[in-house]
Length: 296
Length: 165
Image (tube, rainbow over all chains, first blue to last red; front, side, top):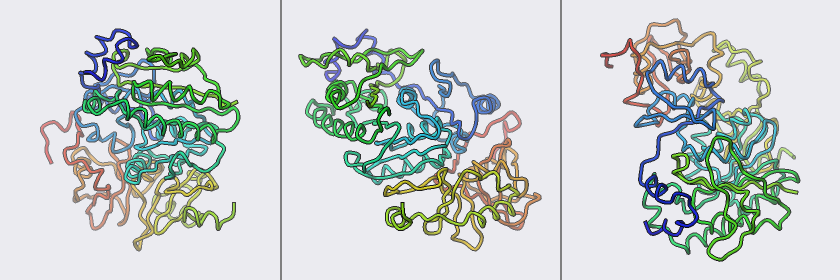
């Protein structure tokens, strides 16, 4: 695929990467500890003769070979949530705690929002923002089914979210979604550089606003599900002079690659190696980029 | 933050918790203690449960989780409120057999002879709450939201093999 060729020199084992890109994604779930616990849920699955494989890196993740995840009674009860494995990384890196004030700036459909709520144990305040009205429907529906009681849903344009003081902000930014090609190949044929550059401007505005909304000592996590450096390192490197510093992203037992310090002649700086890139063939997942910023 | 600014921004108003706790206690035997640490807000004919005692000064689309509807003559608990708190119920709760649970999840009504008062009941399967049912004249009517009903649901266990609804 031509769109991916531009990454030949930056992705390790590029042929292995291409092979994986054309295989379907495994079906994965998150165990929702707001409504059940791992032992109880796994006991139910055993009783129903469903086979599953726990993730190596995250105790609440499962691979399960089922055709229609939504048809499981455990989905109806909100015990599990169908969620792509690699997308569980951003909340893990954000590390929210109960009693904190946390903002999820681009929240719909709410997979990461509900994971954050679970890490906060339904305590503290979680603001889930989503500007697009029909995407709020899925956000609210997931929050309700998964039993989230500490959430306030707002619908501001994230770039202009009202002034506030949060302990942590997640910017899971809109992106060109190349990392999700295993779910929908058409994202690759629709990609072009102009789109990435345009969306990069929006991403930069969202990230800048997130930093403004974070209190001193607080943390901002920026993530996308695309490989394009124009939407990742190019965006994050532009805020490094805005009173934030990068912290190294490292998730034990999950394979990843460092962020890029340069791309096609543009220098991003060695600091950017603290970001993490997760390629599909490294963990048999989608593709992902994560950066963690501490506000000074 | 003044009450008027709350009203203007989100139309959620703090509501009297006693009346709500009394309803859950009289109907399901759930002790008010279970709801300690939560507050209740009203908007229109719905009451929401929220784990904070103050709504932030933001234009809010929703606050916490929809807890019950005051639309009918009798207040109706939401499916998701029962999924969270129904396990504390000591009356008007029924645990279904596999073939009954299958019907309930698919959204059907069924004849059921159980020790229940007429009205809304907590419906569970394998001890885990599925949602809300309406029990009247020995008939149990599924109150699961339409979008959550599963026609071909995967309730399977050894005792059910070969059985169909």
